[in-house]
Image (tube, rainbow, N blue to C red; front, side, top):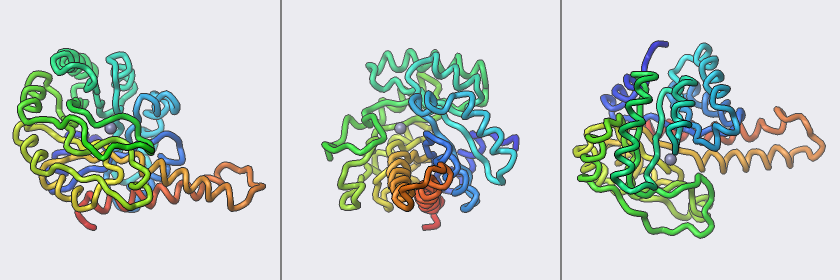
Length: 290
Ligand SMILES: [Zn+2]
């Protein structure tokens, strides 16, 4: 296809839409994401965190994506999500990942800047077209159901931090804390509560950072907040927990249908369909067509 991820992000920005980023931890979820991208004729970013890469294999996932690209008529890009060390970032860059979320947000601000700047240099040395995303602020960890989820935010990213961080590190994209948090509370899974975003802050950060902005922890967010966030300057939206919840419900349904069934691709059919539904509905919303 020859198109770079930067072109995709620029194109999305021009059209006022966001690109959906969906994490995969097994082939069933990957099938669902790619199937939904085809159904919606929408480009997607497939993401895999360090844990997900450990399970699937960093180079094996990159090879799968390369082979899928030959067969599908929409662009698919591959992101190394939440990478906490340069060693693991270099592995992903060498395997052919299109982007890397270099996440040292747990470190003090100055140390995050120092190490991220070094990583940007090293990774662009391997692939000058690679997109590097940095992270500041607290958006929690764990794309899972948090039984004791606090409804309060962590520390939100300020415009001054964003400006300083992007300038000093040379990252292409920034993951800010704007009311988003990884994972979902039980009430979000049940549909009785939703996440809300600080839209004014997103607009401020966009002006200050002047780079691509990524919204992490999209699962469970109010629909109109997604739309507002895209208008305010978000270019990429990460969804993971919603897919995992759908995968589990689909798997349970598949297992319950016939207790004697042992054929994995028969049992997993419902899981693929359930995840694919979620991805389709998210892509519809992110493209402004909802
Ligand atoms: Zn994330």
